[in-house]
Length: 411
Image (cartoon, rainbow, N blue to C red; front, side):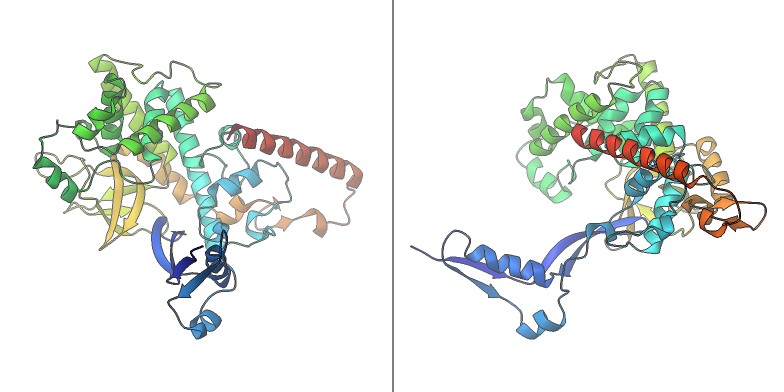
């Protein structure tokens, strides 16, 4: 019986979120001692084996963390904070909440700002009616908000398609080098260009074109699209349609509106919905060149990714405002999946930024007059129906538990 071997280089690719920049990055980091022991255990799982570690034991002892950094400390917390807000417990202060694995203060601030900008909570930190609907959907808050807004503008079918296309973990288009190699063998058909409005519209048009071919995988190959990725997108869109069916105002069919005038209106409504849903992911073009500055408390200079189909005007200038799906950092910060939006839609978001107060957003405090804060624990002189508060609290916890189990069942 042959042995089994594991070669452990001591590194892993780990996705991490930086709340100060709003940027996800895929970093190569050292593994933890727990991960190292797990890798060693794989060598003898089915039969005798050995694990060869390509690092000194001193590195294992001195440099490796004892356990892996919890995911809550390296992810966006918008969804978790929204769930806390949906519990309707007035004494919960998000910034002081006793998490099992406490995330950074900056991550919690980032989540509160995001929820405020997309109307999930009001300026006092209370959950809104829109926020309650978002909390019931097993989706990321920005995506939930986009779909809810699209439903109001009767372009939910198109928004579902875009959301599904964005869910693909890797780009659906082959890299330029692979595309050049493919062109030597055949000339692919021209893919849609997003009507010059940006990548979100192009993703919509690509999927609609694939739908017209009755989801022919050969069409994907002919156009240098990843077949496996497109199939995954199709499954995701089906799941999203089932989730949104309960609140949908119209048809969720891929080709819900076929007239040219209707499509152009859908594109405009879709871009407006994206602006509302991703209000924390907007950027404004610089005056004299095509560089952008992100809109927020810690703005940074970014560029549109070279692969974008966003079109320039007659003077060679890109749109004044754009919404982006993600920031990636390679040689410089780039916005990937970019779409043009209008200043009229951005202005209300800028006004909200001006009056944002992070302490109010965190909740758990009753404001009694200017500069005065008082909690139940700090007001012993007032007559408080403790039994009534306790019963009310228990009922709210039970209701929240039922909502959570319902969301889990729908996933």
